[in-house]
Each structure stands twice: as structure tokens, then as C-alpha cells.
Image (cartoon, rainbow, N blue to C red; front, side, top):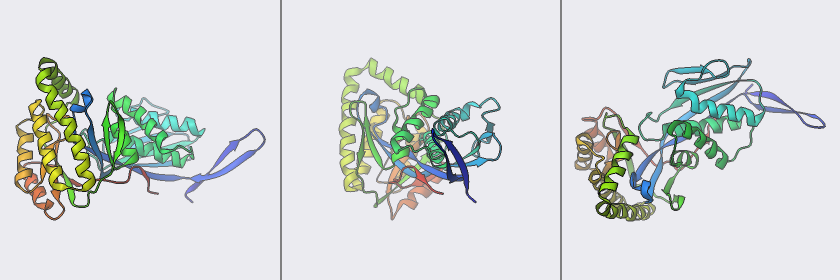
Length: 337
């Protein structure tokens, strides 16, 4: 039987609730489509949930151990009986918080599996946290809404990234496409993605987001009068991109991605390998291609017609060890079982 009994003491009676013994929840990763770096100084960025998902499988135990394990990282911790590894510290925060909120006193098993490459800029850590909060919320009958799930996942992101923007956990919770700016916060963007696929190709060069952000800010401080028009152009571009996304205009989307890549190259976050990936994607049929994320390494994202994207994929595989095809995901966090 996939249920267990929870006994709750009230002032006047004892209430017995039949709760699930196991729950599986999943949450999507994300890709930044336009606006990265420029968002730091107030311009908008647009990010989309993608069909790569992280899953949390949570279940009750017959003992009092609370165990978290990650199949992808090869890590396992009994978090209430041994030191917690740095990699699992954000999830330990999530688990401990949900246990406190629920009043549950038994053992738990939390298993994490993810299709999202770690340290890729695709929001792997946020997707894992969102899925974990949602699964425990369902298992322990905490009663959290999506907004609360998003907030607790953000707390886990603070442990990972110190000062996260909140984009990753918001996208993973709600799905779809979001425009974000420091001035206006988050805004959901309607979209039609039926005519295209997104293709992500790995440069094989590790990203260092902190270094790249610092380098760009330093460049801005040295040449503000030159870079200010670039930043303004990026903001105008993001708004035009949102309109094209609503229309499903793949030609305009590709052109705007190409322009955005040029702006990113101008502020110094590209390199030979990233340029090669962008060139190969465009010349093999992609409507547009650009760096996604901090740059200096990591992935590029290309947009291609649903009828011809396989040619782009095959061409990119000749120079990249990891090429991923994804759709924009309308769904955010889901209870799967």
C-alpha cells in the first residue's frame, strides 16, 4: 500500500490522516534566450523553461533516518546523523524546512535524478530544489501553494549562488517564458513555440559566471558612454523578442538572437569555440544562434525549424560532445506519481 498513517494531536482529539508513502515530482530546467549580462544594469532578460527535467523521488522510511542521495553526483548523506556534504546542503535545507512545517517525525528517503546537465547555466540546482519542495509538500501534506514552493526553492538557491536573481526557481516553478528586470520584476510572456526547436551545444569549456560578470562590469566602468547604447539596444531587443515569441515568428526570433550574440561578443564574453559553435549552427540551417548564460564557456543556444533541426544537430555534434534538443515547456513543477 502506497500510504502511511499520520497522527495529529489537536486540542480536543486525535486525527488520523492516510498519507502517501511515495511521491515523484519534477521541475524543468531553463535557458536564457536574450538579455544575459545586460540584466545586471536594469535591462530585461527573457528565459524559458525547457523540456529537460529534474526529479525528486521522496518516500517514508520505517526508521528515523533522513537520507538524501543524488544518482548523478554519486552522493548519499544521512542528514540527521552525519555531516552534510556541500553539494547536498541546499537540499538538506529544503528537507529540514518541510519536516518542520509538517511536524513529521519519521524517516525519509529523498532521491534526485536530473536530465539537466549540472553547472551548465540551465538551472539544474533550482529545478532539483523546486522538485524536492513539491514532492515533500505532497508527501507530508504541508499545504504549500506554488508561491511558497518558489520561495523555499529560492532559499536553497541562496545557499548555492549567494545572490541569485530568482529567475531559475521562478521558471522551474511556473514553467513557460518569463521576462525579468530589476525595475519591473517578473512578467510572464505568452508564446507560440510550435514552429521551432531549441538546440543547445556544449563548448566543453567550464563557465565561471562570477569572473565573466566582473569582467563585463569592469569594462562598463571603463567605457560607460560606449557601452550604455549597447545596453539600451539589448533592452529594446528583449522587448521586440517578446513580441516575436508571442507571434511564433521564427525568422524574427533568429535574427534577434543573432543580434544579441553580437552584443555579447562586443562586451567580451565570447571566445573561439563559442563563435565556432554559433557559426556551425547558423550555416547548417539554424535561424539564429547565440551564447546562452554567462559566456566564456558553457553552451550556445540555436533556434531551428521543426522540419529541419536535425541537420543543425548533426552538424553541431561534429564539434560538440553534448548537443541537446529541447522544446519550451509550458509546464512548471508537476506531481508525476
